[in-house]
Length: 120
Image (cartoon, rainbow, N blue to C red; front, side, top):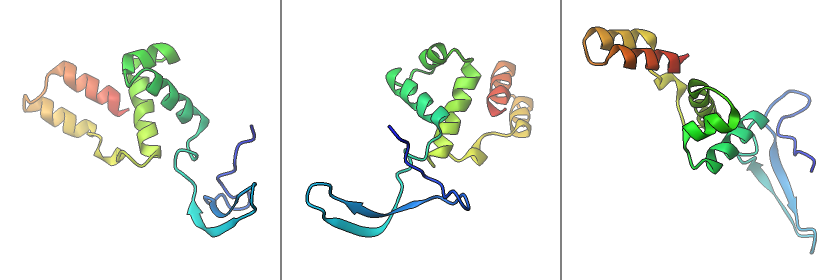
């Protein structure tokens, strides 16, 4: 099956659908319809989404199916959520905030290490 283009070959801007046609009766609908964001996913993110859904959201199973580390699986999930507009990467805790929490005794050393690894 041929992949539908989603970016303009001349300037790289996101394409919009402007016409739909019924192959049976010939009815044409014109307008300005943005392409569904699922169609805009990279092949890498589509693969991850399919594996994630097959694994029913179990990251450990995703990690095993894709043969990747747990932090990589978590990062790929973040990447997918960002590309779908469902996650704001700027809300990820920064290293300084993590270290400040550690210094105040709010989190353990193990938790700080885990958070820092996830943030990278």
